[in-house]
Length: 136
Image 1 (tube, one colour):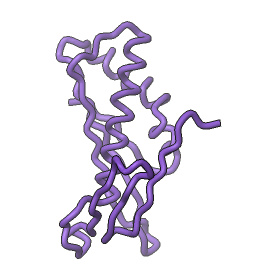
Image 2 (cartoon, helix red, strand yellow):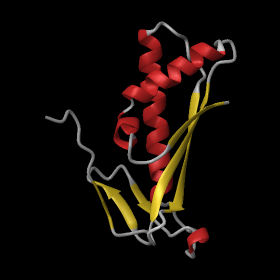
Image 3 (cartoon, rainbow, N blue to C red):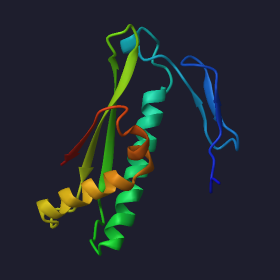
């Protein structure tokens, strides 16, 4: 049984997306790059924000268990919309993690890899879309 279920309703790329509790209520618009106005957010931005937040929180939990201080870390998710070769599109993701400068590079890489194994977004995307793990 789920500990939490998010519920949202959308009317399409040129419409609105609203969560069941009303805390999320955003205007959606097709990106200029796809022929739209770009006057609202889009599903790829929402996915990027969710993945970045989830990965960062997962990393904090993994780091805490390993007794690694990651104060000041951040994660930037880049979600690309690319042709799938069949007339449609698919997603691709690059996760850019900025770690504390005093953290040894090999420790940071191991932390990122461990986080990628436990983050719910990473679990959902694994085997479905390419996800590149980068450090800044």
